[in-house]
Length: 138
Image (cartoon, rainbow, N blue to C red; front, side, top):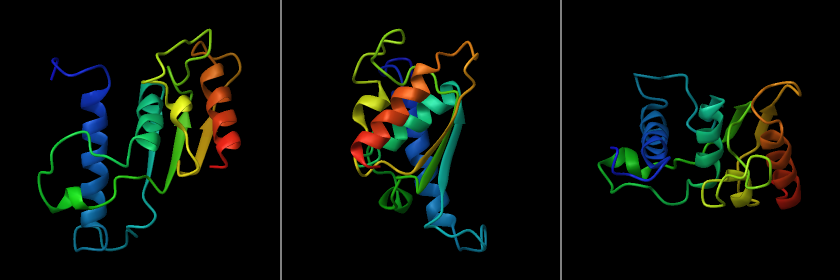
């Protein structure tokens, strides 16, 4: 899917996965899974994707395929471990369209952030995302 803009294909996959897991929750496939307690977790670039689905869940990034796409793709909670490229603030300077911290709202899922200060991935990603969550009351 190289013709898609940066980040579009992983977001489509994440949204689809959330719908499929919610659809299967409570069924014979996943009988003990509560469909109201499904989260999303990622490390580094995966944490970037986690931040992206945290703020881009209200509209599917692809056309409806089946009933799984009628399920919510909003995570009930999220864990972002040393997120990559999540802010438009220097020194990271991701464009605002791809900077999940710039798109946080009060509806953004509760998010746990994990970051080591000496990590080569800029700690500003987690810091500014945290500040966005606090400022928006998420």
